[in-house]
Image 1 (cartoon, rainbow, N blue to C red):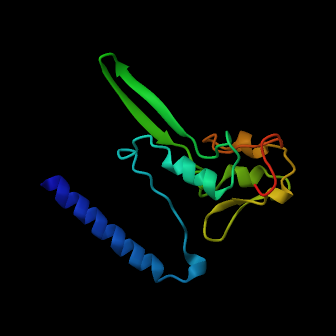
Image 2: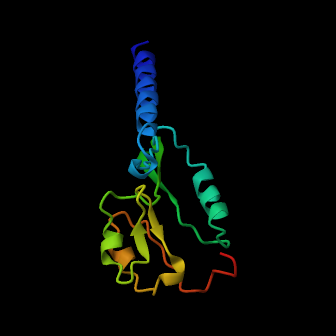
Amino acid sequence: MAELIEKENILLRMQEDIKRALQKPEHERRWGMVIDLRKCVGCHACTVSCVAENKLPPGVVYRPVLDQEIGIFPNVTRRFMPRPCMQCDQPPCVDVCPVNATWKRPDGIVAIKYEECIGCRYCLTACPYSARVFDVGYTYTEDT
């Protein structure tokens, strides 16, 4: 019962935080994302939606779900860890881009101007989460 009460309190606090955040002018709002790893079952729905949203060709994934086996047989469990861009507060990928193709929007989202990217891949090296990918042109087709 105590766990149920705590969850309700958390939901109420989240709702209050959202209401308070929406009172701010739009240019002062910042986006964030939370993934409850206790609920991730490794279904890859987040990967599929990312592929669809970004019109990626087969085999190209921006948002993998890492799978880890824990324990020794017969006491084995699996843990899943989605690995999206973490939308860092001070993103190192932005700092190293020599042409500002990777940039941080005013709302906090880290974005990429693909048409301005020169392919130096400094962002891949700088990302502490290995969340950046680069395609040399073999898998992309028109309109991707």
